Length: 396
Image (cartoon, rainbow, N blue to C red; front, side):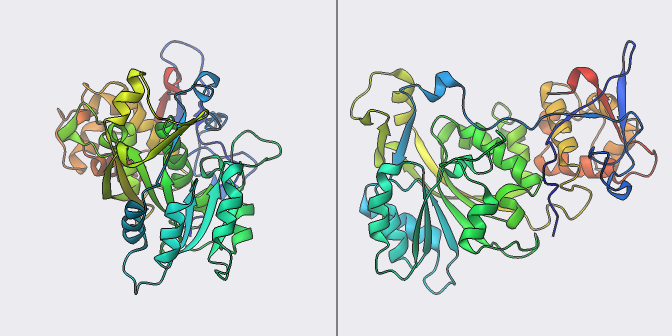
């Protein structure tokens, strides 16, 4: 099992040397705090890169968080709830997983999950729904637990005391009796819900950082995420070189990390939409009308058992992210041009090792190609230091 590096920042602010064309050289691994044992530092150069604060995924900007466009979607159709419960819970004879349901609201879906045999922990961020949800759990011998918690604010990076609906994964899972399991073991629990309507991309990035660093919920193993996601973000998430206009960094990050399945598609009209002022009946806002005409996709994201089987680790994943952001920062360029700015190794030889030509463009590389590219550089023995970081790209 990978041991998460608790408290380590997720990105690096790489120190720059004086003079034109300055750069900093790193060894074969991600930077770690100096006070850690030398055997864990993985041969960093003496230039001692500075550490960036962790990305701030706590809250959307104030303007967005207070906007009347913020809303939540709830399943209120019992037939749809039954269908979704059967999809997520699987075959009746299969041993049930512990299921964390995010923002169940009125509890229609919660009832269907319980009837399908699931053991449910309802994480509800809105206190007004909690008494009703708790009433559903009576006489069920502990098959339903209700906790005032916002799943997307678990382990916030704000520092200081954590106040509900934010919560620490350590406290939550200890309360539920969930223990850490090795990464190569089975799925310890499932999460079911909907990505925030106004923060899908932000939520995806936070989960991605947690997954690759084996921190937060992923400290406990390969947590399976079952989430409804909007059509536009879904198309980007699943894009590859065959959909160049939608193909971007998150596409690679998630396809490398997880096996992604589409479990169900449902139009927006099947859900009740609630804003801060109550149920959304009619609207003239163009942005909302466009959303209501789209579909929602229920996707299952199961972390790959072999994600860390080779040279990619929770210690150096941030260099992998930097490689991707560098490449997609200029998508029309060839891969070899990017490699010459990223590594002192022979870029042509690296491409030959992964079966790519020197004129290969970034947008022609599939997610698995980027992973092989990174691992080939990381495992190279031709040079002590594997990576060059230009100070102009220190915080892409």
